[in-house]
Image (cartoon, rainbow, N blue to C red; front, side, top):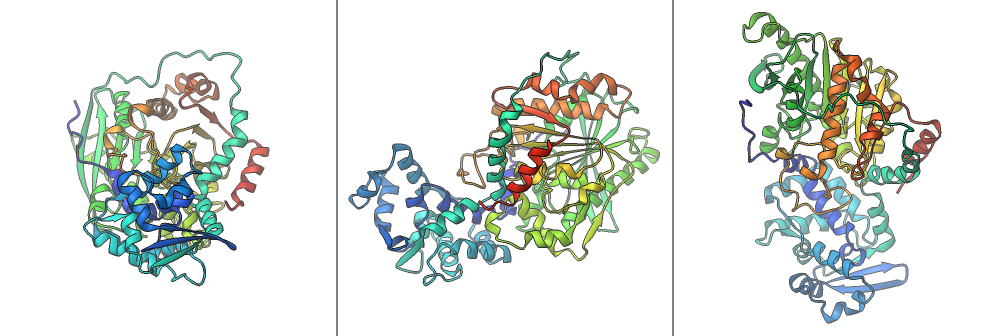
Amino acid sequence: MVQIPLSASAQPTKRQWKQWLFPLSLFTTTILSGFPLFTLPLRAAESVVIRQGFVYATVSVKDLKEFAETGKVPVGLLGYFSFLKPEQKQQALGALNIKIKIKNETVEEIVNSQVGTRLLTDIDTIISADKSQGGTAIKTAILSSAKSEQGLSVINFLENYPLPTIEINLPRAFGVLTRLNQGFWQTQRLLLEVLPKLTHEGSQAPSIPFDPSQPGPGKVEITRLELLDKQRNRNIPVYIYSSSTATPDKPLILYSHGRGSDYQELRYLMEHLASHGYTVIVPEHPGSNATFVDKNLFLSPTEIIERPQDLIFTLNELEKLNINDPRFKGKFNTNNTLVFGYSFGGATALALAGGEFQIDQLRKNCDQSFITFSLGKATQCLAAELPKDRYRFSDPRIKRAIAFSPTASVIFGKTGLNQVQVPTLILTQSSDKVTPALPEQIAIFPQIKTEKLLLGILGATHLSVRDPGTIGDQSWIPVTPISGGEIVGNASQDVKNYAKAIVLATAAQLTPEAEKYKIFLTPEYYRYISTPAFPVRLITDIPPETQVFIEDLLKTQY
C-alpha cells in the first residue's frame, strides 16, 4: 500500500515554465510563431506597417480586434484573408485570442530582470532601425497590459503599445522566428537525415522471456524522511520507495528530479522498480523543487552545484541510518548505487557519475542571443555566474547512471563528459522542445567513453515520460517553437513502457540477475517492441558519417 497520496493540486509543469521565464517568452513567441501577417506585426496602438524593402502594407488594430472578438473578417482585412486557407484563418484567430495567465507582479519581475531585458532587446530587432527603442516600447506595452483588467493578451498588448504606428521589418522578423529554439529545429533537420537509416528491421525477432514493463510482486510503500545538512543549512525532504521484496543484493537507486518538480515526477516508474525489489531514494532539492518555485521566481545560480551535493549528502546520511536506525538497518546498499535523473536532474546525475561542469566554456556558449535558447539551455546558463571555472562531484559509490532528457549541451563543455566513469544510459525524445534532443543528448553522447546506450523515442515530447498524475492542464499553453504540443497521459503510454523496461534492465545489471535482463538492453529488443505511434531505437554509438552531419548541423544558424 502506498502510504503517501498523490497531491491533486500539484502542477509542477506550470511552475517549471514560470521559472524558465516562460510567460515572457511565450507571449513574444506567440506573436512571432503563428501566421506571419497577423501574428508577427501585432505591435501598434492604431496600425501596423509591414515592410519588406520598398513594399509595405498597413493593418488596422481595430480590424484585428473586431476579427478576434467576432471571428468574422472585417472589410479592412478582406484583401489579406483572400490569400489564406481556412486553417490559416483559424490560426490567426487563435493567436489573437490567446490570454496569458500570469500575475502582474510576476510579469514586472520578469521584464525588469537582466534576462528579460536581453530577451526583449532580441525581439525588438524586428522593428525598423529608426523606430527601435531597444525593447522599451515592448516592455511598456507588456507591463500596461498585465496591469489592466483584461490581462496580458495580444490585442491588449497592441492597444497599450506606446506609439500610434509601428513598422516591422519582415525579413528580420522571419529571421527571428526561424532562430527561436534553434536546438529543436536542428533536431528535426537531423531526423530527416537519419530516420531512413533507422527503419530497417532485424531478420529475426528476439526470444523474450517475459515483459519487463509489467509490475513485480512487491507491495510498494513510500516513507518520508527529513534530513538537515547543517553545513549548508539545507532541509532536504527524502522519499523512499520500497517493497516487501527488497533484497540487499539489489543496488540502491538514487533519483534527482527536474526543475520545479517533486518526488512524484516519475512515480509510476519508482513504484515499478520498488515492486521488483529495488529501493529508490528521491531527495527533493530544496532550492529548485516545487515548493521553492511556488514561492520564488528565480533560482540561484548556486543551485546547479547544490543539487549534486544534495545527493552526496543523502547517501552519507543513508549510510548512517543503515547502521544506527533499527527501521533501516542493512536496507541501503549505498556502495552499489545507480544514480538516475530527469531533465535538470539528468545533469545532476551525470555529475555524480563523473561529469565535470566546465563553467569557463559555458560562459562563452551562453554569451549570445537568448532568442536561440531552449528552456533547458537557459537553465544551464544560470551557471555563468558561478565563481569557479570547473566543478566535479564524482562519487565512487555510483556504479551506473541513467539520464532522461538531460540538460547537458553547455554545462559539461566539450570534454566534461569524458570524465564519466560508469556505464551510462541516456534517453532522448525527438519532439522535446524543453531539452531538444540534438544539442542536449545526441551531440554530447560521443563524449562518454565508458559503456553507454542511447535510447531514442521518435515523436515523444519532454513530458511524455512523466507520470500523468503530475502533469497539469496543458490546454492553456499555445503551440509555439518553445512550448505546447506535449503528448502526455494515456497517449504516451508506449513511452512509459519503454522507460519501465530499460530502467529495470539497467538496474538489474548490478545484480546476480544481470544476464537474465541483458536482452532488454539490445537494439533488437527495441526494434521488436517499437510501436507506430512512438518508434524507438537503441544505439551504442553514432555512425561516423552521422557524427559529421551533426557537427555541421550544430554550426548552422536557422
